[in-house]
Image 1: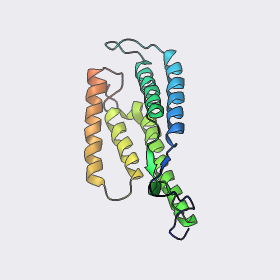
Image 2: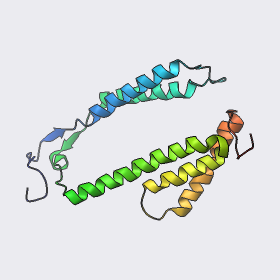
Image 3: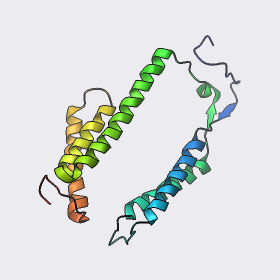
Image 4: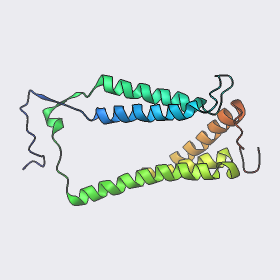
Length: 176
């Protein structure tokens, strides 16, 4: 283990089967199936007259298909050099955990804030808040790209969902 890798040493012509795709595929199929089962109890509607369960049901179908594709595609064969697992110190593990928690916290926090303020604040303010909070997942300076993305997504969401699809959500606070 002098080179920083574990003792998994395979001669240079061989490959190692990557099996990390299996849990992802199974999880995607299970999540899609459960979501589809729940969405089926809502009014699905039609493409021209979408019910409350339409989008969740379509997304659940896409999740199941994605899971099947991941399982059918299988793991790529990795060259032996790429299959070696790097040894990580305790300090690096702690730093990786903090990064993961920052990403998870900002993503979930953004969604929670979006859900809580959507009705009173409207679509535009909620989407801007969502993008702003989720932008903390990535470190480094990003003020202007985040601002442009937030306002662009807010305008796009307002036009598509409120104006075109006529979803009953206010665009601005107090304006329906």
